[in-house]
Structures are given as C-alpha cells and as structure tokens.
Image (tube, rainbow, N blue to C red; front, side):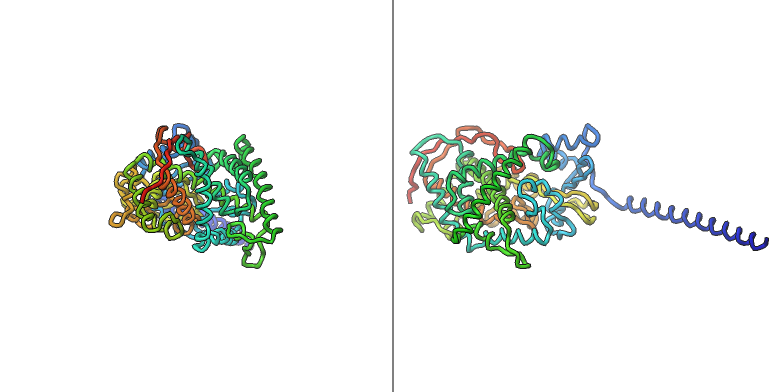
Length: 492
C-alpha cells in the first residue's frame, strides 16, 4: 500500500515537473522569438490597393514606374509580395554588393531563372546542377576569348558591308528592322559559321522573335501558364531545335572545322571527359543567339537613336572615325576597333539609359544584412527572391550627373561616373560572379556596325524618339524607328 502511494507521488511529481519544464521552455522560446523579431529589421513592404496582389498588378502593368515610385517612398531596399513569394529589391550599389559577389550556396540563379527552361531546354544552364552549369558557361566563354574575337572581326565586317551595300544612295528605312536583321546575320555567322544560308538565318530570326513574344513579367512569374504566347514560344523552340540539330550533324559529318561558337561547343568536354551532346549544343546555341541577338539588337538601335538625335555626339563619333582613317585608311581590324573610345562611350551611355535586361534575380538561401548609404540596416530573410535593377540603379542622381541625360562624356578620364560608387555603379552587363560572357563580343559587334554607318551615311531621325517596350522578357524598342539616309564617303 505504501509503495503504491510512493509510486503515485512520484508520478505526480514527474507530471508537475514536465508541465513546469514545458511552460518554461515555451516562455523561453517565445521570449527568444519576440526578441529576435524586435532585433530583426525587415525591409518595408510595397502596398497595393488590392490585398495580396495589388503590388503585383502595378509591377506587371509598369515595372519601371513601380520601382521609381517605391524607391522614392521606401528607399533603396524594399519587398514586393507576389502571392506566395517575396521579392526584395536592392537598388543602390551600397546594398547590392553582396548580390553580385555572393556564392551560389548563398544566392543562386537556378530557381529564379526557371522561366528560361522552355527557351534554353532541359539540362541547359539554369536547368542544370551548378557544377554542370558552371562548365557550360565556360564552354560559351571559350567562344568569346580574345583569340576568337580577333578571328570574328573579318566575319563581322564582311556581313556588315554586304548588308549595307543593299541600301541605295538615299532613302528611308526602319532602323529597328534593319538592325534586327543585321544582328541575327552577324550572330549566325560568328556562332554557326559561314555555311549557314541566309534563308535559314531568316527563319532562325523569325523563331527567335516568336520566342521573345512571351510576355515579360507574366512569363517570369508564370512561365508555364497556358496562354497563346507560351504556346507559340514552345512551337518555335521545337522548330529551332530541328534546324540547329541539322546544322550540328552537318558540321560533324563534313569533317570540317570552323572559327565559330558551334565548333567550340562541339569540341568542348566536361571535366569527367564526357563530350557535349547534340541537345546540349543546341541548347547553348539557342541561349547565346537568343540572349545575344535580342540584347545587342536593342543596344544597336538605342545607340543609333541617341547618336542621330544628339548631333554633338554624332559629330564627335564621326570625327573619331576621320582620325582613325587618317592613320589606318579604310582598314578595320581588332586594334582599330579597340581604339574607338568615343564610339565605345556612346554605346555605353545608350546601355546605361536603356539596359536590355531590366531585372537581375537571385534566390536567397541564407539570411544576410545590408546597410544603406543613409545608415539604415535591413535583414534579408532566407527564401526571399532578391533583385537588382540596372534600369533604376543606372540613373541614380547621387552617382550620375543629370542621370536622365545622354552624356557619353561622363565616362571620360577625370569624370568616370560609372566608378563613383564602386564596381557596381554600372550594371547593364551584370557584375561580379555573373558578368555577361558576351560583353566584349557585343562591343566589337556594335562598333563594327556603327563605325561603318558613321563612315558611309548621313542619318536623320524622321519618326519620334523611340520608347522602351517592357512587355518582352528582353526589353527592346517599341514601334518603328524611321530614318532618312544619304550615302557618303567620309573624307580623311
């Protein structure tokens, strides 16, 4: 009997102890959580008229307007709630440094660029594991090394001269359409080789345009939404796969070798010794053509629009060509292109004002903190999508004097405004660990085109100054850009 009482008493003591312990643990956990939340400073959140989707509606309707308005309202760090996702924007160099320098384990690209998988293909770039993706980027990078660029110059020049030889002594053209056509010709020549016929190149152009019809913000957030634009994208991708597969098989069976990206990708091998497959080569070619053609074409058009509109800089760029011609005659080679510094600055300024890629994205896997130039500290939680925007950061008034003005001289020695706030003051080509692999090639391509036009034509803009089309994934130029041309020979 006594034993039973003792056992009962022990049981009661155990239960009481357990209750007290649980109560203590719960209070401690709540206190710790509350304390952490008090210490944790989350970014301010964009508000919309409609709960949950208000900010999204504004973003889809006009993303630039939303970024500009919230930058003024909330500062350089803020979060946009997108249904079940949070996108935190880092809009000044002071807060975006970690974005550009973080490792893949901290901030990754794969999750946020899933919308490219229907375009690039399964197992390609952002659908591949990091170790494989890193090697695929290296394969593409190998195609843009200096030795390759030197070999590309003659091909670029030949395509440019041939194309503009079709223009008459005078006339009117849609510069947007003309440069769209030319860029795909030059890209096809350098990426696929000279044996690819112009008719196939034109078909590739048409299919690339169909792929890009997929609507920008909607496609980025819901890439598999069953809408006509996505169905057209998928059909165009299948046709591209068929065309490029035939080109790859033809090159391999011919036994010939070329100084182009196609050959570089065919010859590439992974670290384990495995050769690239036909599907992988096709996917990487589409990645390069799609990215390079759309972005370079837009920049070529914007460069022309600004140069033609601002005669001061047209004359400065023309004078530079005259100086180079006095020294080198009509010769254009690698070294001559490198020497076109005035033209380089004109192109770069067009890129600053009209970047083709409006948002750079990462997925956060670890919490990190940022401090604004005003001294405000924010903690960015794990799981947030993190975004930088060249569209806004390239026009910050505390970095760029009269930021909305076209002023290529801001990059001259002594001013160098693109370096005032560190290496991420200018981000049209990305930066840090993920800079654009084709940056050098793009500049050479654009210099080749515009040096030829400056030397051989007078151009006048006869339509209104163009606007940006932000409905596409890659932002281009809206509507036609009509110019009147007059052929000439630049005297030197």
